[in-house]
Structure formats: structure tokens, C-alpha cells
Image (cartoon, rainbow, N blue to C red):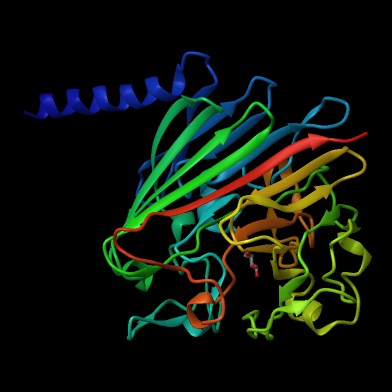
Length: 376
Ligand code: BGC
């Protein structure tokens, strides 16, 4: 019996490895990446596209641990922050490269009411709940499967979040598929279903630095949004949709991150810089450009596309030199930025914001594309 179980396990792990390690084109490989806190083995999957760009992603947290894209001279360089080993991610990570859920961003005081019932969440970002709570989707093991899709090598990650996990209702079945396409896009497609009404706001949390070093103040940003959602001192939206015109939040024409970040502005003070949600100028549910970021020395350009109504642009204001990442890079204040397509923060408590409620029988969809290119 024991022998049979052992054989079955060996066959199962060989099958998983065969799917990932020796795909027809050799574009997906799986390598060991340590273990999680329970001792379960963590794997690192490397997706390589036809142009030689690579994305490495692990099944712990669905973390993108490296993303190597060409610069204007054709040199490949890593454009995301992270660590060399999973132990450092487990020890302390501000969501480097993570799949974020169930609720990306903040829920005020860790409370919301749905269909007349009140739910209480962990207040892990006092006094609010942040990024799904104490053990969000960034800290769980996902089941992994690799395949070649029409667009390029894909890694499919699945996770079943149990009813009551981190305080959220409903057994939630989530699939996240990463694909590295031949046009140098990292595409992430989320789908989810639930067996009880719940709230859901999934996003992605890579910390980008298109130069691969230094601060990001010289990166130029364009966000097609006439309005943003101003926040209180705990970064919870006030409910107002405020015009960006005449404020440091107007990125409708490309402007460097550093140009106005130091202005005497209450909103900038609350976030210690940019840490806000922009209301993108397009109908919710319609795929479109959410941001374009360019970096002059490398010539790299990042375009972010999604069908979500909002974009959280975070300028790495809580990086403070206490974390040392890949290759010994000490991550200092504003050494990276995040672009997180999502629903507006605290939507479960803001009836005027687009709804984040998912009900049984419905399927949640969210596609996020990070597209890289170069300009002279
Ligand atoms: C939030 C920041 C937070 C960071 C966590 C971002 O999505 O907007 O306020 O500090 O995640 O690393």
C-alpha cells in the first residue's frame, strides 16, 4: 500500500515537472526554490518568450520574482524588485511581485456589511485591513500547471480560499494565469467563483524600476484619468471623485514622478508621496490603457492595460533601506513604483463606488497586462 502511494506520488510529481520542465519549445522550466513555513516545496517557474525575455514566478504567493526585458540597446535587465530566495519573501516582503487578494488595498476599520450581515477582517494596517489580511493570497501556496497557450508560455495557478478565511464569506475558487507573450507583455488573467455572496478585488503588486537601479523619480508617468479618489490620513477614500486638474495628481500629460511629489499638498503628505487610486477615463469592464511609464536612460516603456475602473499608483514611499533584495540591492525610499489595476479602495463601504460584490453563479474576470517596449 505504502509502495503504491509512493509510486503514485512519484508519477504525479514527474507529471507536473514534465508539463513544466520539458514543454515542446523548452520555454518553461521549473526549479526548486526552497520551502514554505510548513516545509512544502516551493518551485520557481521560468517562462521564456521568442525574443528571449523571461518571467520567473513561484507557486508561493504567485510572486513574480524577476522580469527580464530588453532596453533600447537590446540588453536584458531585471525590472522588478524581489529576493533571491523564498525565505526572505516569507520573512518580510511588502507584497513584492504578489498576487493580491481577496481584497487588494484597504477596507476601512476591517469591517463591511453585505446583505445585512457584518463581517470583521484583520486590521493588519492599523486601523484598516490591507491586501486581504494577515495571510492574503500573497502568502499561500497555489497549485501550478504549465502549458503553451496561443500567446506564449503560460503558468496557471489555482487556489481554493475557504469560507471564512481571513474573515471573508464564501468558498472562493480562484485561477490566475500568467502568460509571457512574444510582444513582451506579462499578461495576468484572473477568474473566480464563489458559493456565497462575497466581496472581491484581485490585483498584482510588482515593484517596477525600468532602469533596474536607483530611484524612480526620473521615470515619466501618463495616467489617462480626469479624477482620483482623495483619501483621509489612514489612506481610506473620502468618497469624493476629485478632478486632477491643477493638482500634483494630473498625469494626463507625461510628467516625471519627481516633478511634484515634494509639493506642499495634504494628499501627498497622507501617502508620503503617491499612494492613490486614479479613476480611469473609460467605462468599467472595457479593456484599455491605464498608464504609460517611460524611463529615459534605458529607453524602457511600460504600458498597463486592464478593464478595472481604478489604478492604484504607489511610488514606493514605504521602502526605507531596511530590506536587501536580489544581488544585494538595498531598497531605498522610492526605488520602485507599483501600478495596480483594481476597484476603488474601500468599495465595500462606499455605495457610490462600482460594486465589488461577487455572487454564486457569477464569474469574476480581471485581465491585467504589463506591456514592455523601448523608445530611443
Ligand atoms: C498600498 C500602499 C502599501 C503597499 C504595501 C500598496 O498597494 O497602496 O499603501 O504600503 O501596497 O506594500
